[in-house]
Figure (spheres, rainbow, N blue to C red):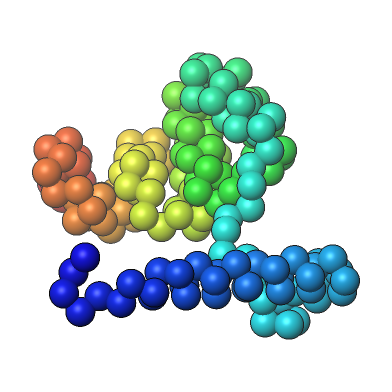
Length: 166
């Protein structure tokens, strides 16, 4: 045990957490699920993904071209947590870019970044789609700069940024 540690502290934290959950369940059961936020009680968990949605997302990642587009859209319709929805949007954008459907790819990458601003691959691929697909290097530059800032050890990011700057 660390010097100065309180041995009963962990037990107190566990008791508080258990009590918080019991109160939360009571509020949900008695007052209904819409009463929990009004009572100042909220769940700290992300929504649970449906198994079918997760399996469809996996199939989307493995599929190619039109099949991938269809499966990614199906996974999004089934409902995914924000993190997985960002991955699905990135995969959708990649499939659309492979099909040279650049406007739709840019929209998918932007949606992925709205859901998860730290999605580095979506940032990079948005820059590529704007530069190569839509021939908008000025619009692509900030996205490629952000990709380099987020992952400075990736040489491809630097090469693509240099291409836009030339």
